[in-house]
Image 1 (tube, rainbow, N blue to C red):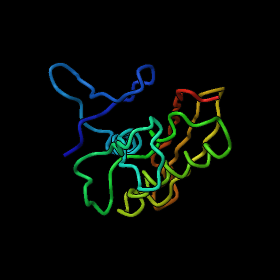
Image 2 (image 1 turned 180 degrees about the vertical axis):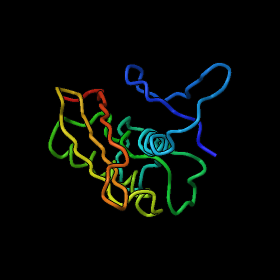
Image 3 (image 1 turned 90 degrees about the vertical axis):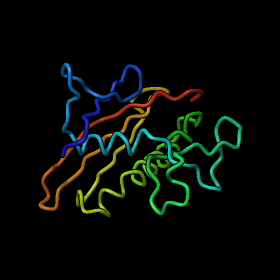
Image 4 (image 1 turned 30 degrees about the vertical axis):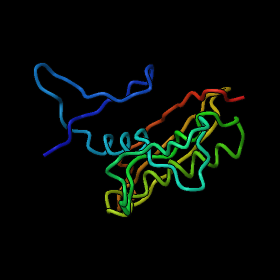
Length: 149
C-alpha cells in the first residue's frame, strides 16, 4: 500500500496532502520520506543552542528514547548568520535526517549540495541514488531564514 502523497508548498513553506476529489492521492513514497525527514523538527541534542532563547528542544514525542529519531535539526539554524559554517551545518543536518534511507536500504547513496542562493535564502539540492547507481530522486529546496545577515 502506498503512502498518502504529500506535496511541498514552497510559498507557504509546508507540505500538504494531495486530493483528487473525493480521495487522497497516494504514491510518491520516496518524496514523502524526504519531506517528512527534512521538514519535521527533530529533537535538539543536549549541546545544541536553541535559537529562540528557550529550553524547548522541540521534536516529536514519539522520538523519546528512540534510537533513530524522525526529522531534521534544520530548525536550529533559523537565526543563523549567512556563512560557510551555516552551510556546513545545514549540509550535515540534511545528511543526518536522510541517513536512515541508506541504513534501511531504501537508497544506496545521497548527495547533498547546499548554497546561499541569495541573501537570507539557503538552497539545497538533494539527489538519492539506487543500488545500481541510477538516480532515484532529485529535488531542490530553499529555506528563508529569519534574522540572517
